Image (cartoon, rainbow, N blue to C red; front, side):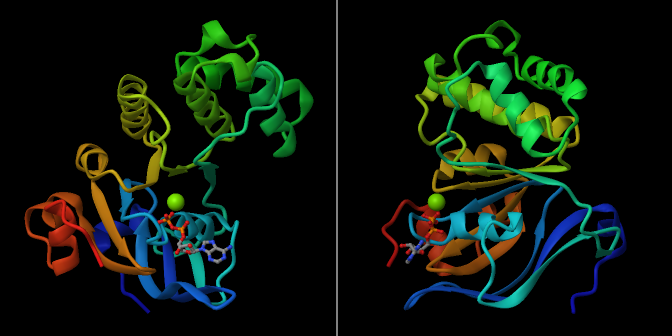
Length: 245
Ligand SMILES: Nc1ncnc2c1ncn2[C@@H]1O[C@H](COP(=O)(O)OP(=O)(O)O)[C@@H](O)[C@H]1O
Ligand SMILES: [Mg+2]
């Protein structure tokens, strides 16, 4: 097992212990062992097909390893009470208001009915969406729908958000606005774990970087260090904008 340095004891992690995931003949993730920080701004960076979405799904428990084990840790020990909320790459809005979408997520999570309206309203307000609470969610812009998706996740009171390509389907202005919201949430103490293929976004948002290539984690460490002096040749090439093979 890994030994955890003293200052990290207060942090939350997902610990991957020799995790392999196969789908049919394909080995999607190959014997991953790492400590994935949950309480920082962790960016999982890699080209399409690298295994980023699958890694996030494993952390959330939406997929199970074929072999190996994943545990949530806090205070240096296993802690299943670490709460995570997942934001899908293409959030699906129900055919109802933004407010009702958030309330629905709360209902599914077992929040009693008398507490849902206030919690949903507060989450939407926190994302600057008070004005749109009672509009049909599917008529909102892409950027607004992504905010509803963030509000829906936040309303559950997570320690950390897991975000799959949170700005990939947005125009640059809407993407920049979402990035600002994410930084504000991080400033409020919410951990972020974000999968992206977008190097520029990773440079702007990451405090910790996990670089994936073909189902393996090639590098994991403080983002500034990884960007300044990448150890792995493949990351060096990715940073230089070259094709990976
Ligand atoms: N259901 C599946 N069956 C077979 N292969 C899959 C399945 N889902 C994903 N894969 C493969 O797993 C690899 C990693 O996928 P994914 O985690 O979605 O990568 P990323 O999010 O980095 O683009 C890809 O090569 C993909 O084709
Ligand atoms: Mg993906």
